[in-house]
Length: 97
Image 1 (cartoon, helix red, strand yellow):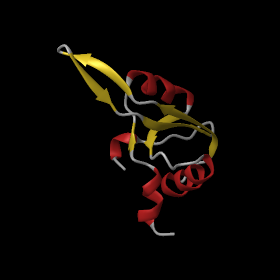
Image 2 (tube, rainbow, N blue to C red):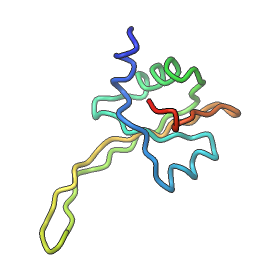
Image 3 (cartoon, helix red, strand yellow):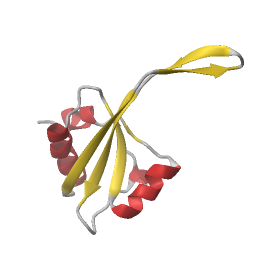
Image 4 (cartoon, rainbow, N blue to C red):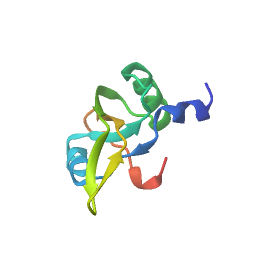
């Protein structure tokens, strides 16, 4: 499997206040495609970053509408994965994917 196919299952890291706080507990949050599953994610992350993954939680954010300047706007949903790493290991997100 080439390096290009490994990166297909990871779209981008999610950098929010909540995800930054999770990094203290060896957890990293990534935005993943809707076709991603736990088994493929675990294999790809272990190969790309050379870390041991202990657990993966996947969350599906649904489409929603919100009001912006009095108009209804659609906000597209996405799928995100919270990856728990083995103690003592970490992924440096500042280097880029």
